Length: 589
Image (cartoon, rainbow, N blue to C red; front, side):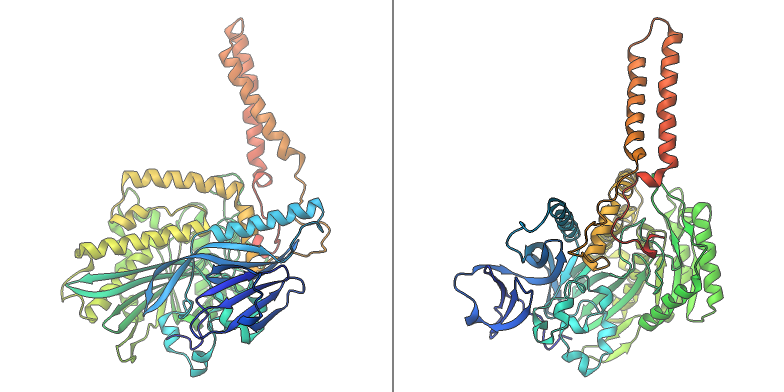
């Protein structure tokens, strides 16, 4: 299902002081995109208009344009790596980018503006350095096989940018100027964010392609503790659509699942505690957003089977109870709900108990089926519904369950296609099982890095089918890094995502940017007092006084001072974390 007009694949960038020229070097192409560096106008011209004096370099795609304090910038892809072939269409991962200023000098900026511009550039670089940007110039990666099979002839004629699913185009905001000019659409490359694995596999001497694609939504995107729940449009935080595809002898099968934050209004702002207490909003009408969320999910995917994996005690309990109650109140036969306390059921390494949940969902999974199209392009079965899994972060627990559901679907598909013999199990195919488990663990890591800032937890189980002591140690280390990032660098990460996706636009004439929010006096004073008091406590211990009572008195005094200050810091935890500065909207609570 290629678009008739794919995007150009071979590009050259020619730079002159007045213009950027992007030349299409595909066979038979004469198009050149001219971007005026002064007026910012974008026009279509031809190769003979490129001045010979231009500085030339190869590029692999235009990500788009963005306005910062110093004016406009052009973002281009400078390196790519082939992931594999999707039905003989090349799929690439963008691995390096360049951010080019339209302006040739920064002399027009004040020192503060220069500082701000530098901060905004650092934000863009941060987003671009997060692994997981994928594209294809001839295939629409943003749609599932089932969506592509149910399209009109008009859809086939559209450019990749027009036909892409806006939920999964991460450079939609950066390409907004290109979108308005259909004649330049072949230069506009929709890029998705998430994870793609492609493997050629063999079972019983039969060769098939196995693909795993996770598409992250750019609506309500952000980092773990600052973006939870839904927004007023019904978009859920950390929403990811994961599709598993099998291609054998011309037949294609696909099984789609989703994950997304618990879909009502709740927050869990960092406050220096290891696990901040989730707060359910008391002032909004939850049903409104909740209904919008499921209405749009039903339109996209059909029936919904919610698999809620949060703890059913402690601070997560109210979220489980509210979710169950709201599904009940919704009273929609298309939406069903199952709660499974993952941590309780699998405590003390009893991971075999996950089979209880699989058995509970088996009948539902058989009813939903999967999408299958034969080698003649005839649709044999449609997937009638979807599993929408969630835990708190929709990362570690969710990924384990998704990989088990996907394996069960794959078992049925491979049997139906004749790859597996009757009575054969995927688990017994050692070579394929290793590919399968590692790809799902890599998927978990990619989604976790993009949302929580570190690799996923519990991937030892996904990779080996067993929980190991080393896996527990690695989980502890990742949890520690997550704690640090969530408290001391996530504000910057959230701002970076908001800038990149256009949730915040830089205003060139803005006198005071939101980046210059003054910190309270206690932000500096208390940590200094605590460090001094703790140091004095250690010094008193090492340099004993004349009598032990005197030493004890000093140690107790300075010890109490340091612990007292630490208590005050934790009590005012929210003032000490790195909070986002750019967007103050419902995303924040």
